[in-house]
Length: 435
Image (cartoon, rainbow, N blue to C red; front, side, top):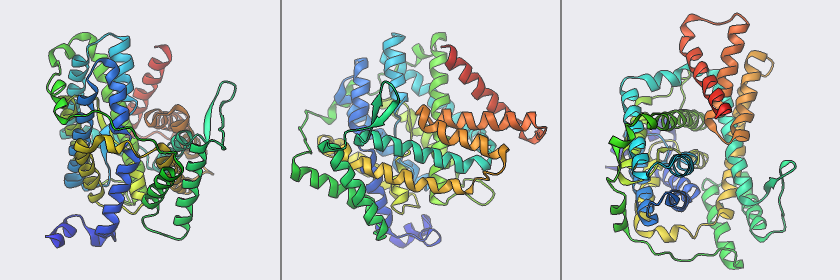
């Protein structure tokens, strides 16, 4: 049985083992377990019962990740997307005064459109239209992005009204604990300990318990609470003319955030072929679209691939097993959700910083001496973390690359989809600038 599974997941070709893959899955789960609490906290502001959203979050993250691992065989975990859940809550429900049931209907319809685009091969064509010269820039930009997230969660970088950001209070106990975790993981990496990230997270958490910096308060939670949101979506209401814009935003942001995450994680894992193709791409998108549809039925916002999967890849994950392990952990969280809250951000933030640093190695592949490549790559690299959006950074890179090729007379007819994609991004930026 195990030998058959090893052949299916191509352990021999990928040079991996069960121990490495399982540890990678646990690492990914620990770095993204915060979503079990953050997503319900955001969506509950719409009036959705927090217990129901907690159960829906665990369920769709578990099923989506397992589906990704089994069908697509990639170490990419899925869960309700940060940013899209905020758009769902603050823009759609609170600002536009649309009931959460109707918003869930819009998520469902966007998932169906995702699925149709996947079956029609459209999403695959969009990925292939992205210049291979930008692949390394996307991976590096995402690395800076997740490192920046880790630095802010650790309190090492904080907001400043004059300079946007500045150095935080390093004497703060939680920040000092995060710095300890950062040093611990870095040392384990130097000594080439395969489970360095997972050991570092757990070691930091245990240290926090000892010094009294890890606080955990059990919360009231029942699995049966999911009935308050399950199948409560209003599809007919979402078909109203006023909801078309909402469906488009769910569709557009999720599509290009997923593409950016997919390229970055695949690049880091060495899964992109020499001709810049990503194997089993249609299966990846099928898992993503199916998880979004399931999430809307259960009662949560758009489900997408998580860049925290890079932590599992950095821990050695290469096959679909890490995604399956992460999914199983989310399903277990259905029954133990309050316990997951014991993992503090001061323990997971160092892992994000380390993973971000490791992902920056890809920028050495960029031809910095060629302005046609260097400028779009630079924009992609810096705009992803500075705009806090993979889609926006990717859009800046594609739009500038296409414009430079057009204006320098290097455009080719066979690249028509690239220019169409660039036009879509430019229109998006104009819309954002006037809204």
